[in-house]
Image 1 (tube, helix red, strand yellow):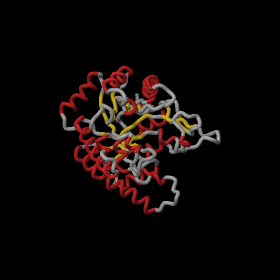
Image 2 (image 1 turned 45 degrees about the vertical axis):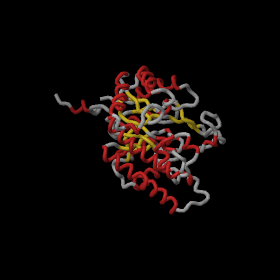
Image 3 (image 1 turned 90 degrees about the vertical axis):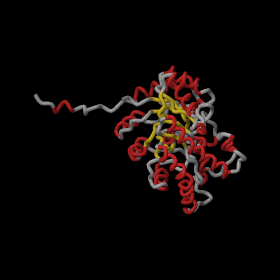
Image 4 (image 1 turned 60 degrees about the vertical axis):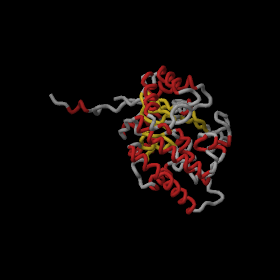
Length: 334
């Protein structure tokens, strides 16, 4: 069966889920990857059978399927240090509470447990999200950072996420961490270290989003091969680099998205530097059979143009592996 192509609703959460479903269905998407913010999904209603049934019926009305849900924003707050006004802007009042940092982390962890239970109630087995990180603030390694401080950061991640993953295991759902700057795993070697920190437990895998690898000069196709047993979900987002003029820097220079002085920008799928055909061939090679989800981000293009165009691009390349080798006919006998 052809892998479903879905639309991630995170960048559309300013619209009601009903409207996003109508748009996605009209464009020809097979399903949605639904975000747990806006009015799209409320993790705390996981045990409300009427609510869960209503969400599924909404999708059914539009001929859409559901294969995964996402809760990046609350996952970010589980490990982050510092917790500050940036988090106030992305977490709910329920998670923020009085703003006490440790309280925010604990409430965010409880919401991630609820998200696992909601996924199970909806009949899906994958939650995509972030983890946050107590040590991302040390990425420049100056002032000098001791190895003990880095080790403590991975212990903090394991201590906070193992109880969450226990709930994932209990309900039969997997967490697909998006390898992303500002997270505990943001590149190749931090992904290795992160998996080691939790003993490679099977509930924790990866959401492959190549856009965050391209601007770091990490090979996103080789990443698929090396972590093939941990690729639990795929998001299609693109990046275009503009670092050849001797001025634009890799770290973005504190410039807004789409500013031409930036060294790179997220861009609509198919318009950037991700080697998409090689990536889809590698997904076939590793046997990935899950959804292909378009995460549309492009500060220089209207989303109502970009989302259907991205679907057309992905569908043209996300071909299935053949049933037999091309030279199999040579082995036939008269």
